Amino acid sequence: MKRHESQTAVNPSRSGFSLIELLVVIVIIGILMALILPAIGRVRYRAQVQQTSAELTQLDTAISKFASDFGVGPSSELVVTEDPSVTTWDSSPALILTRTRLRRVWPQLSFSGSDDFNADGAFTGDSGSDATLTLTGSEALVFFLAGVMSRDQNSNAIVDPAEVGLAPTWIGFSKNPVAPFLTTGSNRIDPIFTFDPARLVDTDGDGMREDLDSLPGQQTPIHFVSSNNGQGYSPSMSLYVQADGRTPWNKDSHQLISPGSDGNLGFVPTAGLKGPYTKDAKLTGGRLTEADNIANFNPGTTLSN
Image (cartoon, rainbow, N blue to C red; front, side, top):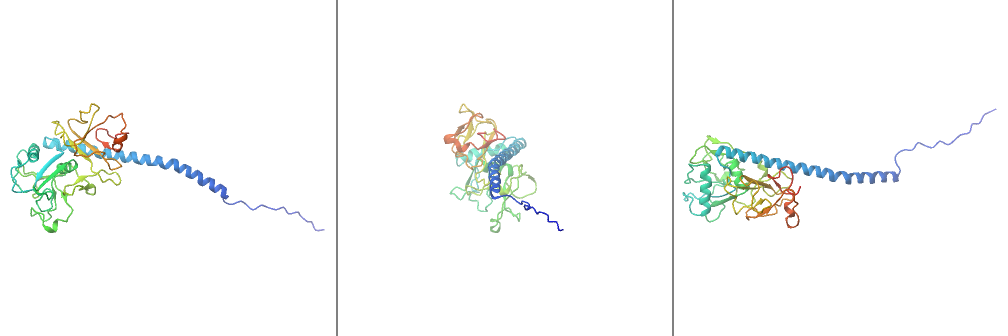
């Protein structure tokens, strides 16, 4: 007799997620990303701020070395002339002041040479009528810390037409005490600081370079302003003062200010403005653009930390 066994249906094993479950997972991932990404962005931004602050500290160190080597710190405001017929630098108050400042660095400096400061081979300064160049802020800092600019590859003491389009190099200063701006000769003082060429820009078109910080997309140079070795900050240079509205931060040395991630200092560097700032206050309202500035007198963070 044949035995019949009953058969029971076996459900097939379940594979994957249902559509609803997938949607739930996607929503959860979206929520997590919404929480995590801003935190990652904040961490990245803090790291960028700290890196920029460290760059200002490196410049501080280089400025201190310049002061140690030369006996005075670098000025943040100069007017130089490339006109070979101007041999006394006394034709304007600005030239007289520059002559005094340069003589503090090089006491034997002669002003009778033909110096092509922007290395364009033309000896016309910024192409104005008086063949002068005005170096302010970062321009002056690059000049003092990196030295004279050169495109003279064949060492004939001039920039030939074929060399005008070459990328410049900074070669420090000549050890000749009478003519430190010579670009020829091997007896030289090396640059005190090596700037990243990719971060050297010419925002005013005069051929003299200015230094950018490393913040992504930065286009505004670091602002440098000197106290002129404790003799007083220039009235034409903008700077930060303490709560009393008079006493500059770093009153006997200098200020270095990055414009921060927005690329906006919030003031004109050469307007002679004095911005009050206290470390426990927030910059708001009309000064909100200054809030992300990074300064050497408030290291490691922004002004409105």
